[in-house]
Image 1: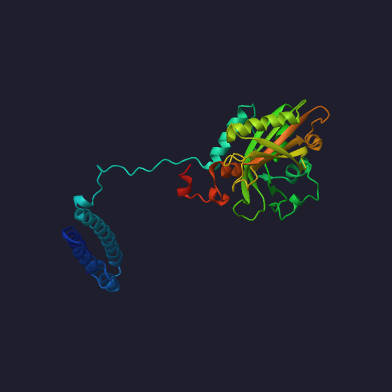
Image 2 (image 1 turned 90 degrees about the vertical axis):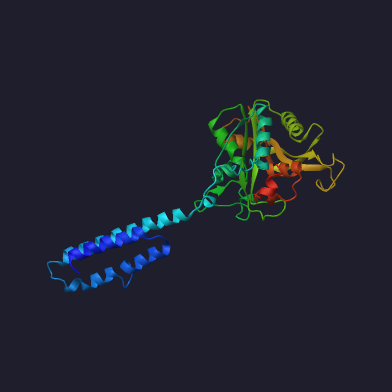
Length: 337
């Protein structure tokens, strides 16, 4: 097949493609010209029998035929598919939109925002710190003895470089006091991490709100007044509050703070384990060693600190019996809030 015959073959193939009225006819054209036993394949096999001076031109024309025919087949296929779509298969722009319901705030976010608003009304400001902390900020500066159990690998997540995932938000106190002089009045909401086995009341990661007030002549009475006000605003005006002696390395004296059960009003129920009280937070007067670690003079200033679990408050207020429900992001559960 010479060059002139090849040009005529291309025109014929393109004409047949344009006249094809169905996908079956179009496939027949493709097989006839581009198939393994098609015309173009025969032309390429016969190229060796052509005079040497004619081979480049014939090879070029054969490639042009292949490329143009493939493009024409693609365009024709798209045109045939579009032609077969009737009005019933097209998108109906007059249909109303598929509207999705608005999302809601996560219960942990709601409790955090509510607690922050309460403490802001008392003059506290929000401070933040990193989740990855140094051993010094997390333990040493907070007066935690070297042999304290919380330093063990069984209790704390250590990183390869010697840092750790903070066990509490108390390191924010240290960072803030290192950069600011008294008076200091801050709260520090954030995520914490401990090596707890997850169950209905424990999680390896949880949320806390840390509070710190440092100034001259700050007393335990100031701490009690602050927490009593917070309890009434968070749990309702009828809530009662009690303090029990406790021990924390970074406060002295230290107390555990219980709120009267809002479910039974203190009469005793399953939520409060028949005691009428629910443990909410730990608190106390800041230990002088903590002040020394951040460069404060413990002879001149005093202060109190407290820390509470956000999950604990959410479970009590909303009647949640399993802490894991707060992390599973089940839409059916979250819709209730």
